[in-house]
Image (cartoon, rainbow, N blue to C red):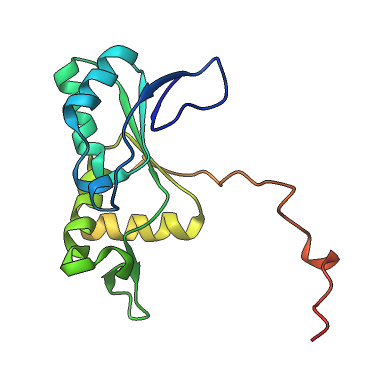
Length: 168
């Protein structure tokens, strides 16, 4: 396995390719640094590429084509750039709507979903919302969408039945 990230993981069995950390939430979605991406793909020759930012999946697909590597793209939707109103209207997430960039982010998210071979989400709710949003953007997720629950750290989780209410 090769991890492309700003810092290496602690496992010596995992190869590491240095990639710069995007300085803003918008660069993470709109500036994938294709030259570095193509070089990393050529060096690693992956079977699968996981896009931690779904919006860059089309750029990953383009980099794979340029590098002449036939790999699957798996997008992990850790943050959905939209939500549904009580009236079931698709709305942009305010956290990604600086200077009205929310709609372009949402469209880039839809393009990313279309570019992925597999799409992973963290919950049934995220799967439902992602399916509904994809449908409204004419993106077919048939057989692509899978729920993968985030890891649970037993040191941080407690059974609510064992937790005493605060005294106030």
